[in-house]
Image (cartoon, rainbow, N blue to C red; front, side):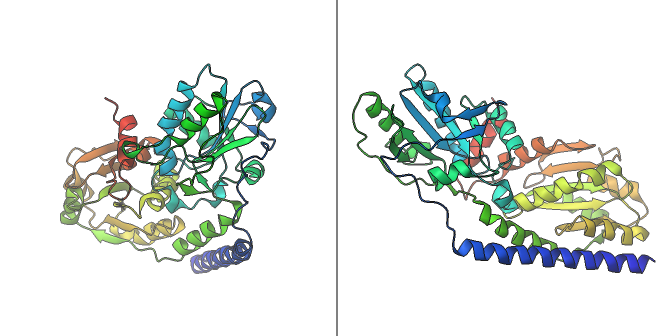
Length: 397
């Protein structure tokens, strides 16, 4: 009976993989003829919209008719470039208060089209509920509207990347579209394009530079879902392994003699909270695993329970390194990793290079707290300035 169940599970996994690959193939056909809509042209009237905001209200174009100028900013949560511009956008809103300028931010991405490895610089993705989380965390001072389900508004405006700014005059004619300023790294900014366009419009002058390129993450149109499905199929095709570890290896694990962040999750097959939060750990690994980040799970099950441990890991598609206690002397193995550990699971430790403890918890973790700690401590040698963005909120002075 056990053998038959295992065979059925394997068949189910194969069928799922075939389904995912089929959807990827369909998406590829769509992609070939759809590269996103054209960007709204200078001189065009503002397309109408009515979109849900994170404030629980529906926001429409007509709601901003009283303002002399309307600024539409297409931005999102997950993009590191968009994140670096959040403070500057908030400052723009603050600086133009009382000057008859209305600001509206729109999230255009379809969350289903965002790959997990595209979330390597963020704590949340681009769903409506996650927009609320980001806005509260970063204290947004502007309306934040969601267009990810239909992308109807985004298709009318045609933002190419996030952030992408559209500025309309009193007649709601487009007078400027493009970047906020001329460098994502604020210390290198020499021209504040959106601010200059606003000042010229408010002074009754034509905008001197009406169009600029906008650097950032590409808009995640719905057809890109195929790329996400392809990535999932690739992950789920990898083999799952687990091996026994003794006291020496667990002691070395604790030292973390690597140049990477190391997340260690101790768990057991009989631990309900462990299994409940396991998918969140897998998500973290898939989000940050392409950066200088490693994750190791350690089952405290006995060695003769290896088959059950492996089955649980296969169910979670746990493709990272998986260890389990290699001896029935479980207390000496616990002490080899940490003499202070009292033995409760789940037990989670985030280690910096050289073994510095950045996070330690016996019991379920706070997923957002741990994600933010990870990205605040990941080296930003591939996106300088991003670590500082996160450290200022995770480690406030």
